[in-house]
Image (cartoon, rainbow, N blue to C red):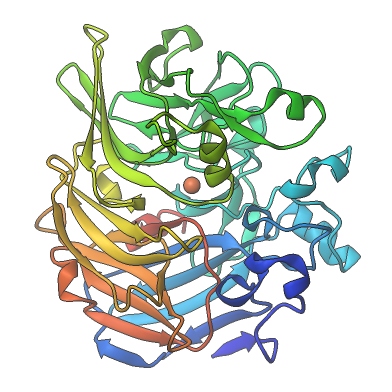
Length: 486
Ligand SMILES: [Fe+2]
C-alpha cells in the first residue's frame, strides 16, 4: 500500500468558492495506490481482466474567482482487475496548465465563469478532465473544449506526454473521440470559435494521423459528442451555442435557438470535407451518444436527447434550456435518430419517455456495430451530477431491462462502464463497473454488477477508504488492449 495523503483528504479550500467545491464535490489532495481492499460483498470475478478508468475535475489550488465544475484539473481514478485481484490508483493528469500552477504554487488561470478576466495568451486551462479514451494501448485524457490528447499509462496513470498525431493535426481534440475496437481506428473532432469551426480526423492503430479535414459549420458551435458506424462518422451541429453579443465581448454564455434545427452530418470514415451529408432533426441539445450503427441504407444513432424546457404554453423556453444545460441540470431521454443514406429521409423517436437517463455505456467492442444493450445512469432531477442508479436498456425497444440503486436518496454512482468477461458468450456477458459514494454512510465503494442482470445488485462491492470526488467520463480497457502498449 502506498499513499501520499493529506490528513483530511480534502484540498485546503471550500465554502468561499461555492457549493461545487464542497461536500460530495470537494476535490482530493491525495494520490494513492491501494491493494487488498476490504470486500463488503461477493468476490472479484476472475474473468474480469483490465482497467476501469474514470476522469473528473479535481481543483488543485483555490480558484481565481467563481468556480464551475468544468474548471477542475483532471484526475484519473482507476480500478485494475487481474485474475480476481483489484488495485485502485488515482493520479493527476499532468497537463501544461497543471505544471505551470505546480511551479507557481497557486492558480494562474481563470475558470469558465470568469472569462472576461481570461489571460490573453491562453483563454482557459486545458485540464484534460472530461473523458478518457483507450487507444493503441494508452489512455488519452481529453477536454470538452478541445485541447491536447494527454497520453496516460493505463496501469501507473503516469502522464506520458501528448499525442503526436493530434499535435500534427490542428493540435486539438474534443472529448468523446471514438475508437473502433475492431480496426483500432480513433475518430475525433475539434471545434472552436474561428472558421472553419470544426475539423474531423482519424488516427490509425499505429498511433499515426491518417486523416484530417475541415468541416464547414454556419458559425461557432458547441457540440459535445460524435458517433461512428463501421463505415461512417457522424458529427453534431446543435442549436445550443454562444450568445453572439457575449462572444464578441469575450464572455462565455450559451443560448438555445429553438428555430434552428439539430443537424447530424454523416460522412465516410475517410471522407473529404464535401462528402458530409447533413440531416435535420427537431431542435435539441445532445450531450451523449450511446452507440451508432448501419441498418441497410439507414444510419442509426441512439443517444440521450436533452429535452428543452417548455413554458406554460408548451413552447420551448430557450432561456431556461440554456441555463439548465450550463448548470449541468440534466433532463434527458433515451432517443433514436435514423438517417437514410439512399433517400435522405429522417426518423426520430423516443425510446423511453419516462426516465431521465444519461452517461451511457455499452459493449465498446461493438463500437459502430449494432448493439442491443445500453447501460445508463438514472439521473437526479434535483442534484447536480447525482447519478443514483444504474439501468440496463434494450436499445431496440427502449424497454428497461433492470436497474439497481443501493440507496436512491444517497447513492452517487460514477459513470459506469461495461467490461466484457474473458471469452464472452453474448453481447451482455460481462460486468458493469462503477464507483459509488453513499452520502448517508459516508462510504465509497467500487461496485461490480453482472451485466446480464444488474437488478440482482452488485456481485462484488469493495470498500475504498476515501471519498472519490464526483467525475465525468470513464472507459474500460481490457487486458488484451493494454498489452498492445507493452
Ligand atoms: Fe461528456
